[in-house]
Length: 112
Image (cartoon, rainbow, N blue to C red):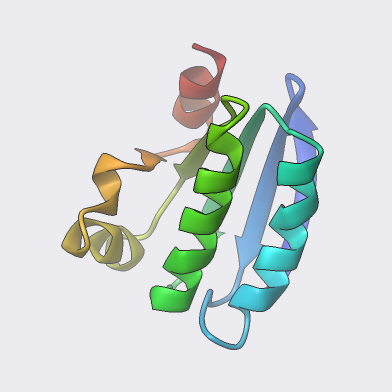
């Protein structure tokens, strides 16, 4: 799994490439932990390169989401493949996470 970051309109956009599974989710967790402790107000995760996510990956995202609630942090996920989006829908996490078809719509939601 590879993680790269760029900033657009002061919002960090984190692009993830590869599977978010039991082997890789600790790497994502370690990447997100400082974002929460630095109280990053808005974060966009670009899932264009993610073809698979398992329960450990979902747990990592839930952990980050919960850790930013205390200071009102926002998290948006963009460009989920149908397969990955289906995983979120099966466990009803689309009701918790802000899921968007593309980066521009996710950025717009984070700015509102």
